[in-house]
Length: 77
Image 1 (cartoon, helix red, strand yellow):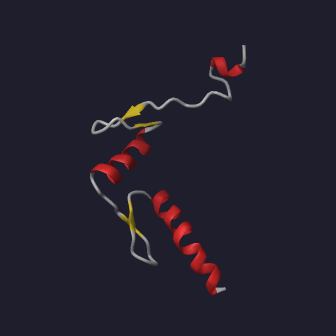
Image 2: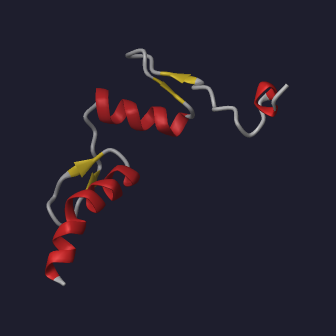
């Protein structure tokens, strides 16, 4: 048998947290909390300092900044 049959390095993590408001599953509590804040509560405490867009987590804000403002940064240089 392959090592993945016993939860080895090839085995993907199973989602263990289920949203109480929809059927979404997440791998850990932090990801589930971000989902609930973003999708159900529309709570966006993190604001972009360049364009003032808001996001639910620091990670989402960083992704926004890279996607939306990296091109602007390269044009300025």
